Image (tube, rainbow, N blue to C red):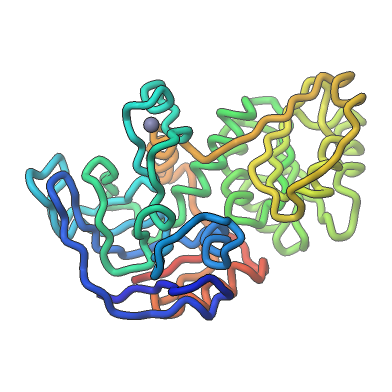
Length: 342
Ligand SMILES: [Zn+2]
């Protein structure tokens, strides 16, 4: 089978398309013929080595993918060969305290595809039967591969960690990113008033089309001052912050009394300092967020099937062009997800 993998850490050019042996399923496993795989920013970090995760080379990336069941080892479960599937990105242990309480996103033993396990930048991937999720015929493979991480994470951040609900005001940073555009849609479904920031007016217009109410170009104006202006000096109830650095500290300035800031990324700066006095006087809350649980993933994928959430796809590349696809993701001149089509 064809695979796009890398033999050493480095820039996009270390991704090479080569031939390797197709996996065969053991008992309780299936092999999925991958039709589409989403590229996530974590892929770039794993490739370059900045994620500091120990890998076995050559390494196959690809956390979220969809395709057809090509082979099943041992006894088949509810799904059979030829069925359309999406694969939940993580294999939880199913026995730890977090898995047993429905919080399998916090499982310390399970592995991720594309990180601990060979991922979807390949024509075929071996997966446990428990990871197979049925994909309804009305959802394309591309939409499925673009939905899991973006909508799942946005849901977990806003609904679960942020407690967002109808009537709330919410600030979504970098609404042009994959997770940002997904968060605008989730916040719209929740019935919140949405303040969206982006680096260009073009990205803001696309955020508006997805449901954002107030648009703030952070390259032209101070977003915190603008949010305070628009809310009569009150600030917003919930902030989704996935930039870090100065964006994180300035976000605190436009958080409403008793508001919550959910942090889920820090590409622009991992270490920050902030003023503690207004933080406790305004009774603010700082909450961290991982990605979605399997239950939340199923919830958002169900909403994609119903047409209530619609993934935004920037571009799709052939598997052999993985290096070019990584360059496009890294350029940040994108709105929505970038995919590979093995
Ligand atoms: Zn577990």
